[in-house]
Image (cartoon, rainbow, N blue to C red; front, side, top):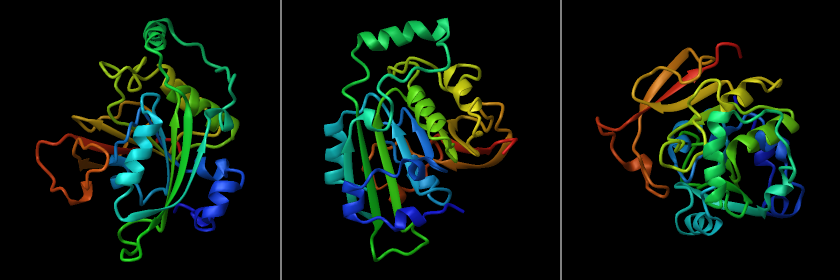
Length: 259
C-alpha cells in the first residue's frame, strides 16, 4: 500500500516555501512519459499510488496552468502549487550514461530543429479530495509533478540520481509516429527501455500500456493483471462520468517478473 504520510503532512506554506520533497515525490510514483494532459492514469491507478509524474516537452506552461485554473482535477481542490525550472530538480548539464543509438539519433536531431523541448519548467501541485467524497472516490491527496523536459533524460536524471524507482511505468500513445517523439518507447532494447531496466534501484513494479491486445511491449512484464476500457479523452473531460464504449481502445496492466 502506498505510504502517503508525507503528502498528508503538507500544507500550503510547506508546498510553496519549503525545499521540495523530491525523494518522497519520486518513490513509488507513476511515471508517464509523453503524457500531455491525459487523465487515464488518474482514473486507473490511484489505488496504487498518490504521486503522478507527467513529463512532456510539448506541453506549454500556460496551457497547463489554464487547465488547472479552469478545470483542475474532478473531485479535488488545489491545496498548493510550486513553479520551478527543470534545473531545480534535474542537473542542467546532466549527461546520460547511455549512448543514443544511430537509428534514434536522426529523429532526435529533427526534434531539436523544431525547437523542442520548449522552455523548460516544473509545476508541482498537491490536490485535496473534496469533503463530500470518501475513500472510495480516491486518495485523500494527490501529488502531480508536471515536467517540461525530454522524458528519457528526465527519468534517468531523477530516478538514478535520487536513488529510487517509480511504482508504475506508463506507455500510452507516446507519439513516435507523428507526435514529435524522437524515439519509440514501446521498442525493447531502445533507449527508454534500456534506461528503465538498467536502474540498479530496480524496475517499476507495474507497466500500464495502451494496446490492441494484452501482450506487454517490454519482456520484463509477463504477469498480466487486467484490462480496462478507456476513452481517448482530452484533459478536463469528466472521464469518470462517461459510459464505457465497446470500441474504445484498451489499457492493460502488467506486473514485472522480478520485483
